[in-house]
Length: 402
Image (cartoon, rainbow, N blue to C red; front, side):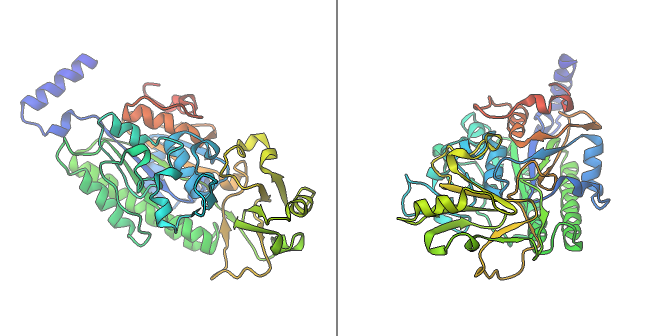
């Protein structure tokens, strides 16, 4: 069969068929931020549902903490946040004093020191001479380990979803020698609607349906260009509903002068103020209603979290659906949905769909950890995976050639 295919390709090229006819399928990794696994069952995603029916479907458990930057970096490195270095959306590093990493700090986002603890798939591919185009993926703005992707774009949340799809198709119109073989696409509208209106809202359904339309446009564009693609659709986490009567207040147990925090909501990261270490420890390390706190060295082993120097000294995790906050916190608008909760919570489960020539049809995978997406990507892109926390065995039964 392989000899027959090789002969067929040779005939096509000799007959003047376009150069892409001899190419391997492009790998396209699509992230729909905040797309909970069960959104796929709402009957509003004809395109994604068809991909799932014709390919492989499963639910992924995010890595801890179930936040955006940590899990996006996990998906492309195969390392959990405690090992890939992006331990939170907002963090500090003793080796980078005076700087707080956060998504709005553009200088930090572009600083490779925050990302160099791991090697994302596009760095491995570029080093092997494979052109890549990770579009709007956390980390692409930094020259990680001294390597940049061939094509990348500075993140702009205001870029319409349609323009994002158009950019990917434009890259795939490049001449074969310049055309990327690994591409990512990122949509944030579902996550935004989930935060603003809650996961059960009409607004989330509209956002889900809108992304489905754009993925349909991508597929139509691939078909029109005769491009074969292995498409992997993922999310970084799910979404849980919040309400005004499910809040726990940190200042009920600890005065604000005793600590500072870089995060609130599903969890709080706590940094004791100088001279208040014992006070903070006594206040936090005891039973609390609707949340639990740990010293970083004592975070439960199942979370695989707490050894990285960037992890805060204390970590307090709320029950799923509860928010940890302070009484003087005044958000610009109410938050009706959140993530960051225990990855084992059903609400945190993320979508996974794989479709293309590398995949079998109609396969439903058992729930698996998102670290296993990375070895799958390495197989599709045909690079040797770096040491990682995943296993291709989690997805193997969905592959034509495991």
